[in-house]
Image (cartoon, rainbow, N blue to C red; front, side, top):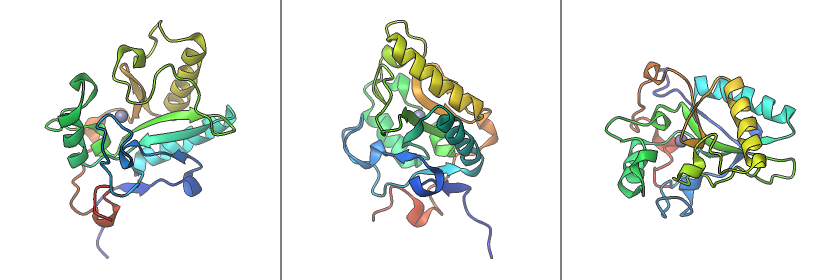
Length: 192
Ligand SMILES: [Zn+2]
């Protein structure tokens, strides 16, 4: 038996009690096109452990996590970079995104009925409205963002200032960028 060629774990509603709505598996994203041929939600095994904690913390608040993106193949990062309306919000694929390490995910909270909490701006809204603690965001949306922040940081993730939906494991240099080679049918961009 050879060792697994990658550290990724498949995240599903059944195994992780999350809602999955991968933005890049539909044309409803900033690139305006389908990027993933397969709607696969994958995370590095270390991030998966933290996600399980976050799911439990969200449940304590009567919520579930809704995931928009997690592991992102390098080829997808190139596409997003090439089509980005504002490159301040996209990692240069030459440097690499933490999504390509499998250690980052984009997500929000939904209530007991599955309705997304008001976060004051949409996922991937690449404007200042998406910055944490922007005073132009309503008090309710600020509270909802703080609930997500507390949930994710309590579970071991770190936030970034410009995207309320993005969380990643700290110290990303501990994790290599993952090559798409070896992912096979687990590559979200592999033809289905
Ligand atoms: Zn992200």
